[in-house]
Image 1 (tube, rainbow, N blue to C red):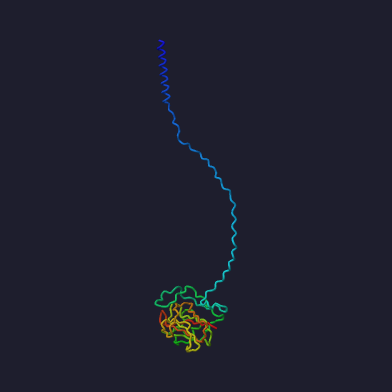
Image 2 (image 1 turned 180 degrees about the vertical axis):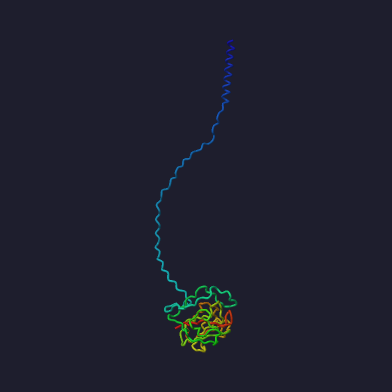
Length: 279
């Protein structure tokens, strides 16, 4: 009986031990955290370099003072005459009657291009005056179709009706008697500037005698000698309110003759005014 109790106790102990072992092995365990912990970064302020003193600017060599600009010389039609004792010719121009580049002139050879600006000043000896003012005028056409010959030197340079003289067709000329010999520096003539036209065979001569036996030609744009005064090398030009200004270079004479041979609009010849500037 005693031995059975002992064996029974041993058996109970064995069973209890086995249950304890089983329960211990079945206990749920939390797996270890294998993730990498987030590191907290501590920002350390960067060490700033010590401020360096500003370098003193290098001394610049002294610059020479700029020379004052010289006054611009006025534009001149004849710059060779810009010398002591000469001054711009005191021309008074009539009012313009048209503006812009003419487009209705065709078939004219040797035609000067428009300047697109006012004509430069013309220099002449101080004291020059219009020697032709009020002087007598004769013509190859003594009975003009329109107007009177004395209108060519009356001082009216406007292009209005009644201000110009109309001569017959083909080659015609007008001659101005200055009364005595003078040094002539410029001749300015206006044919017709109410509209854009080109006058052909424009020739200007100066002579000491009324028959022009010994004459000097100061302008000639007759390219084929159709006026019988020789072939010229000057260019055709479009009539404007500025007129044609001719450099006579101080030639001496008493008579001034102007030729023309019709124009780009018709065969007639016209004169508004002729000025002769000299001393």
